[in-house]
Amino acid sequence: MKINTFAEATDCERQNLGKLIDEGKTKKIYELINDPKLCLLESKDRITAGDGVKSHNLEGKAEISTSTTVKVFTLLHEAGVQTAYVRPAGSKCFIAKRCDMIPIEWVTRRQATGSFLKRHPGVPEGYRFNPPLQETFYKDDANHDPQWSDQQIISADFKIGPQQRKIGKDEVEIMKRITLVVFEILERAWTARDSSLIDMKIEFGIDMDGQILVADIIDSDSWRLWPSGDKKLMKDKQVYRNLSNVTQQNLETVKQNFKWVEEQLDYIIQAPKPLVVIFMGSSSDAEWCKQIAKSARALGLHPEVRVCSAHKSTLETLNALAEYEGQNVVLIAVAGRSNGLGPVLSGNTVLPVINCPPLNSDNIERSVWSSLDVPSGLGCTTVIYPEAAALAAAQIHAMHNHLVWARLRAKQLDNFLRLKQTDKLEHLLI
Ligand code: OK8
Ligand code: C2R
Image (cartoon, rainbow, N blue to C red):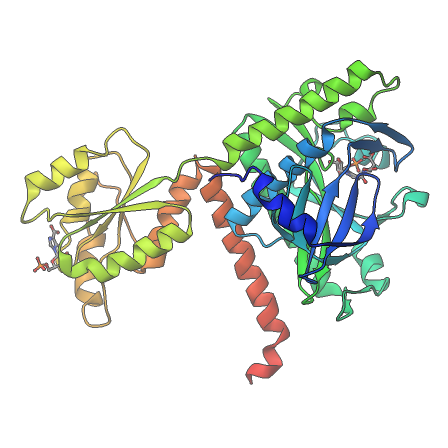
């Protein structure tokens, strides 16, 4: 995946710039004249902590922060998580869906550190939360962002956005679930760079269509990140928060840390698409295979199709198999009637083989048994739907590929969100 160099978008977006909507400690938000549903976020060369009490100029921070945010949101977008982020626009800016923000910080923790330790004396630093712990804080600098319960958020009776969307129990549940998935996707991605995501904070907004979206920025201000799981190697804003005496040299270290994070994200978002080879026994199985390939692509896999029959062209089948030995490949065998193909492949390789025979209501009783009733020593598995074959292959690849893992996690989130939405509209169904 290629990240734009920002430059191409700059000029036209600047001409389109409307009035300043809002200005925070580290960013400005502008209207876009030609598109009232979008806005432009511009980062400042400013670093702050302690609700703004500590604040310094840090030349170059805006570019690093923007690029970090762009890469993080690109990763989430590729996974299938909807966010307000739209596209980069110059080295210090990006375009986002215009949102009215919900004044809550959504924090997820994998390990105990930071403010959690102050609020829970006796719990040792590094205590592991399984599942990750979720906390919410009301954004109120003057009162140091007090922790709020779900009940407090619901009782605040927020009505946000042009449609005045009420933030009730469902909305809180939706935001909690999205927050957890965002954390888990980023945690898994950072594992690929041998770094531990310890905790993080995100924020939500309501866009002009009334949709709840992850909004704002996600950069080195947003999380605690410990390379090799070692607190002493931390690469996030905590280094700045901890400084009792802020010198130019210290600030340079903070900036170099942020730059390191921004560069690591290139490796994270550019992971190769893993290969799934669909072996089909006859060209008559092509339609079934197309359905598997379509689902596989949607999960971030690269499908390849081979036509060979273990019954009719045994040697060619084994030669084709030999081409994939030694690689991280999942094989899917599509063979109707008497399935020799899947079991023969499985018996001659250690690569995982998933049988997905092209079944229909007429042949299922007869044909499925030839995939299931295999001799001892074979470990091929069998599924009966094309989507299930792609999902099973993706789950195998997800064990070593964080982008596929992210797609699967986002798909589960999507299932949850769809059911929630349908549940709300249930009265329209009957
Ligand atoms: C936030 C997780 C960690 O940075 C500050 O000190 C204050 C403030 C600011 O001015 O930017 N930052 O509001 C903030 N609050 C929580 N988090 C923030 N960035 C993140 O949430 O990953 C923080 O980086 C938990 O933080 P904790 O332990 O302080 O509650
Ligand atoms: P033909 O079109 O060759 O007659 O195949 C194919 O996958 C197809 O569904 C008819 C059906 O037989 C299947 N077939 C197998 C094998 N080779 C072909 N089951 C095999 O080697 O197992």
